[in-house]
Each structure stands twice: as structure tokens, then as C-alpha cells.
Length: 129
Image 1 (cartoon, helix red, strand yellow):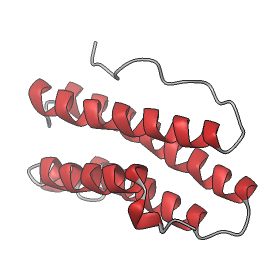
Image 2 (tube, rainbow, N blue to C red; image 1 turned 120 degrees about the horizontal axis):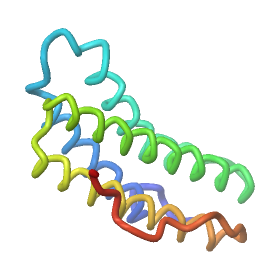
Image 3 (tube, rainbow, N blue to C red; image 1 turned 120 degrees about the vertical axis):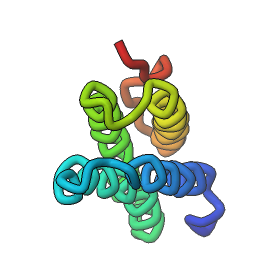
């Protein structure tokens, strides 16, 4: 059985976490328990759910945790868009984070499909309007 740390999805999720922590470092102090905390929790949830699911004893349970990880990626995507609208993130920073989120979403979708389920696909890069 492959260790969760060997999974590309987990590695990319960890990389995304580090980026989210860096870009939220300069958010307003008043957001520490608001958007900053929400974004960090959503980001941390992605590799955490991948790891937890990998440690479970069934494909069904593993798949469930991968869905949770993908849901957290969607949550983070929304929060990045809001942070950009509020001018806490520049468009350039947001584009970098959104590209990483899109990559993680696609990897998770592929991993879910490989476990025998056919989820709705993530077909494009998340983008700001």
C-alpha cells in the first residue's frame, strides 16, 4: 500500500497550504479569525483529508475523504475570489493560487475516478471574473 506522503495529490495539497499561509500573512489583522483563518483551514483540510482517507481501510472510505478534500479545494477557490474582491490579494497572487487549486482539483478528480467512481470533472482553471 502506498504511503499518503507518496501521493502527488497530497504533495500538491501541502504545497498549496504553504502558498496560502504565505499570501494570507499580510491580510488585515482583523481578518485573523475571519477570512484568513477560513482560507488556512480550507487549505489544511485538503492534504489532511487525503492523508486520513489513505489511512482508512476501504476504497469507499478513501474516496469519501477525497471528495471532502476536493470540496475544501472548492471552498478555498471561493475564498480566494473573495479575498481578491476585497483587495487583500492582488490579481497576480490570486491567479497563482487559483492555478494551484485547479491542479489539485484535477488530480483529486482523477484519483477519485481511479477508485471506481465517476465524479463531475473539473475541466478548466478556476479564474477570477
